[in-house]
Length: 381
Image (cartoon, rainbow, N blue to C red; front, side, top):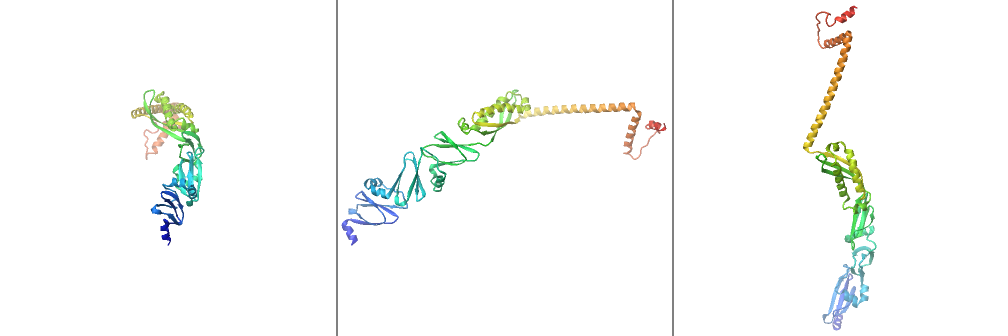
C-alpha cells in the first residue's frame, strides 16, 4: 500500500544509515541534507539525484557545495563546519581532541559537523613564526609536521635566527620549530667552544730562495656569533687564509737559518697580524704555532752533512782538549818524579806488583843493582 501510494505521489523511499548523510537534488535543485532513517523524497519521472557521504570521511567534498550554501544556507550551516584562513594565518584543526590537519594561509576546509567535535587554533604569521614545543610534539605524533621546520642547537652552541634574510634573535640550546609558510626561515648554528685549525703543507719561498713547506696550528673561539657569520661567508675559512697570508709575509722575509733558529719569534710576529684581522670579525685567536718546517730532500741532505761536520768538529775539539789535559798531567807527574827519586822507585814497585799479580813467577837478574838498587840502599842506611 505504501509503495503504491509513493508511486501515485511520485515519491521514492530512501534509507540512510547512521554513519551516512544524504545530499538530495530534485529537478537539478538541491532540496536538502538527510540524516539516518527512512526518507520519502520526490522522484517524478526519475528526476531525484542522490549523493551519499560517509561520516568516516569527514571532509565534505561535493560539486554541489556552492549551490547548497546559496539555496539552503541554514541547512548548510547546521550540517557543515567551514574553516577558512586568511593570507597571514595558519589554523591547526582538531577533531575530538586530536590534530586532524593544518590549514595553510588562504585555505578553506568544509567538514561534516557531526563528524566532530571540531576545534581550531589560529596562528598569525605576521606576529610569530615559533611553534610551541608541545604543539610541535602533537604535530609530530599526528604526522602533520610538513608545514614546520625544526632546528636543533646543542650545548656549547648558539643559533642565529634569520627571517627573509634578516637577523631576528639568538636561539639558546634546544629544539626550535618554526612555521615554514609565507617567509623564509633560516638558523645558522655557531659553535662557541674553543676549536683548533690546522694549515698543513703550505709552500713558501724564503729570502735566500729556499722552497720550504710549513705546518701551522691555531686555536680559536667565536666571541661575536652575529659578526662572525655576517662579516664573512665562512669565518673558519677566513682564519685559514689569514694564517696563510701572515706566515707567507713573515717567513718570506727571513732566511732559512733564521726560520730554523727563531721559531718562537716568527710565531709572535705572525700571530699579531692574524689576531688583529680575526678580532674584526668576532673571532678570538689564542695559541698559534709553527709546528713543522719541512725541507726538500736535497736540502735535508745538505743540512745533515753540515750538522755532521759541525758535530765532528766539536768532537775533535773535545778530543784535543782531553789529550792536552792528559799530556799536562803526565808532564806534572814526570817533574815530581824527577825531583824525588824515591817516588820514582815507588812507582816502579807498583808496576812490579801489578805485573807479579798476573804471573806465577818473576825472576830479577843482576841482583839489586837495577830495579831495587835505591830501595836497598835506603834500607842499608
